[in-house]
Length: 128
Image 1 (cartoon, rainbow, N blue to C red):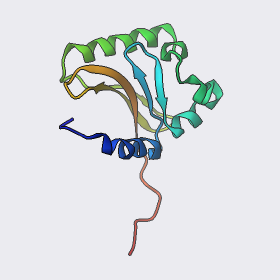
Image 2 (cartoon, helix red, strand yellow):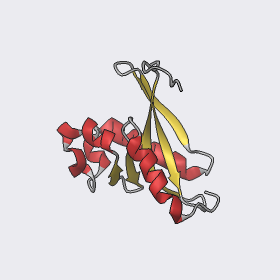
Image 3 (cartoon, helix red, strand yellow):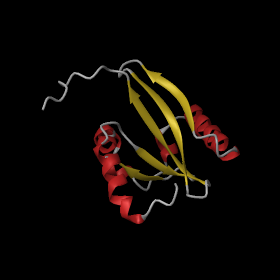
């Protein structure tokens, strides 16, 4: 990450916590190690923040677990394998990706799911 110092950690945490899309970060063992507030809210019926420390695999069926594992293996094959499109959620009009997380040396350390909404912004533009 080009020598990013620990001083930036609060900034990165703030970016994730302000994101309106759910962010669930997992270790290579599929343990949920972080959920941003949007994820806690989105998955409240499944346990919300109590999911941290549990296995992501427990939240998925057999076919999904198999696909998640295949994607993690693909991430591990090359430092260039970092993002893959997984599906489009028609109901919420968003694309969903899995994204590799790597340490400063490029080693795979985990992954997360990224949601990209396609909805046009409805808030008015800033006017100063």
